[in-house]
Amino acid sequence: MSLFQHAVFYTTVNQIRDLPPPDGVEIAFAGRSNAGKSSAINSLANRGRLAFVSKTPGRTQHLNFFQLGNGRFLVDLPGYGYAKVPFEVRQHWEHLLSTYLQTRESLHGMVLIMDVRHPLTPLDRQMLTWFGSTGKPVHVLLTKSDKLARQHAQKVLKDVLAFLRETYPQCSVQLFSSFTKEGVEEATALLGKWLEGEGLERDLVHEPNAVPRQNGKVKIKDPRLKGIKTGGKTNPLRGGKAGETQALTKTKIKNPRLKGNKTGGKLP
Image (cartoon, rainbow, N blue to C red):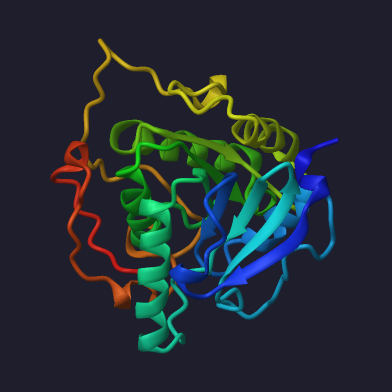
């Protein structure tokens, strides 16, 4: 049985000072509001309502900890990119998320949820930049894969992987659907290894997602994702939904490997 199926609610946190002691192993789930984060968590846990699913974006407003047993935790982070959130709340979330992601010793990896129809928004890249400075692994779930034709979904997967290879080499990526259960078994297996302390060394273990290195070096640049078609007027480079990039401002990139890779974003 998957560790995720043992998940029970543990605590909710709205201030860094209230975080539990960093004694265990944590995996954080992050993603844009309405990208399917709560549904993905429920699918992995094989539960209907472990994480609250709402048709209204922005409902997850705290760091919600779920205990998986033996000092292991799943951490559901606030969704970002919801334009109707008050400015003061966005500022608080930004501080809470960035501090947690960059300084939490017990955080072993992050699962980043992206809607396959609107991948790699500027805010998604900001999350990658914040967490990239830690050198810890990231697994991207391209959710709602059932919303696209199979060939189209595979094309998006290929293009997103190409981008991640060049800019955030600690990432792996896969298609995922809470509706058809595509990718649930694959994600459960990988994250189970993280929780057991395995698979945290680079390189990536999934053949379709593997990131080859040449002479131990990774070339860092910011390609423009040519060829990604999201099935509508939405531009994945401009954040997906109207108003989503309004909160973006310049930010410093602490990771020296990512110098020059300006994602230009504050969250949420």
